[in-house]
Length: 253
Image 1 (spheres, helix red, strand yellow):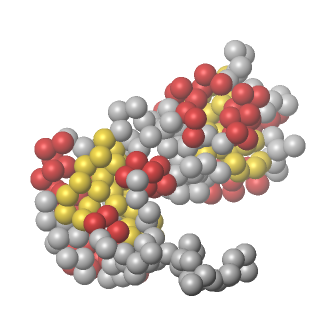
Image 2 (cartoon, rainbow, N blue to C red):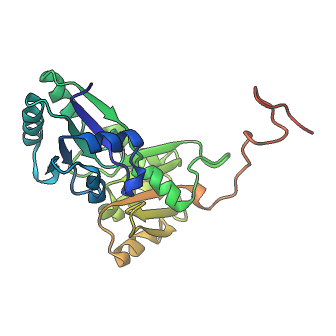
Image 3 (cartoon, helix red, strand yellow):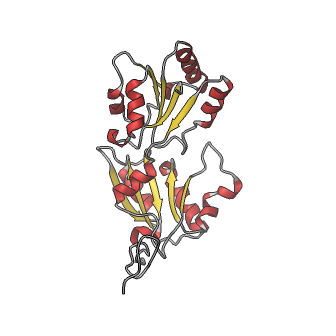
């Protein structure tokens, strides 16, 4: 059995953690959670004697030291991240350190906020003849972007784009998206704290969204979705087309 479980806590709603994730949290002797983003309601699953650490106030060395000490004392550890830890979770550096220390671990995936955002919008990101590609990215900030992943270059595809960690730079986001090829009338939806009780949905276009964001006072915990799927006619899927046959169903006239 793994000594450390890296768990995706989901986007906010405590019921959106997986059953496996919930189980290991409830069994853990030590939980280190990303306190700036993880809903503390999930910690109610912890047993009374569980040691709980908020990693928002810790650096990497301190996190690893807590894990090392716990493992040396034969304790089960959960490292609890928001959403799915594979996306902007900074878990690779943690996993590399665990491997160096010969500490066994597993990763338990979670529901990403970009998927909770789609659910909140009641929107499919991939509509026939509109967009069949979803780009997950962020605006360049203190973490630089590789040259070929600049927002303006990605925008040239005019695919559905889910932009993390960038609402505080909305003016720069819009500037690069338009520079890259999106029309000013392209619809934009922003979901603040997707799946939380105080979730908010903001809609506009690339031309109007900056003023709307400023008026709403949105500065964090928001997913930006830019796509023509948000306001577009589309072809019906072939999957359920009665005239389309596949290995499970014959075509009907």
